[in-house]
Length: 141
Image (cartoon, rainbow, N blue to C red; front, top):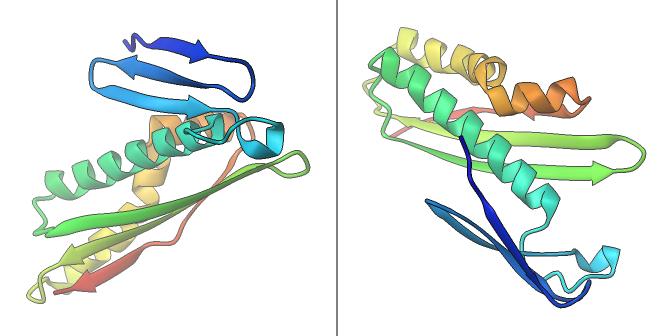
């Protein structure tokens, strides 16, 4: 269960905060909507939720398989337009040791899509007609 507290100061040009047990985030209305833009906007928060869910699901899959993952770095782009709705693209990059086997590499390649299907936040967004794409990459180091 999530329990959040939201506090807003000022009018549309103001800012606010959303806090929870392990979160403290400044929020603001974007400048394109007449706000100050001095904080995260709803699209940022939605994209962050989808990105963290996807990343954690991907790491859980690789950990369950006991793969020698060195790390995961990921960028996410989110665009919300009136015409096309919400589109999110995750760009995960999984780092494996050079000694990784072909089987381990192939598992990670499949895990990119499996994590997308297993991410409950992404699935909720897809049911609301959001488009989510994954463009994964594996780096051997």
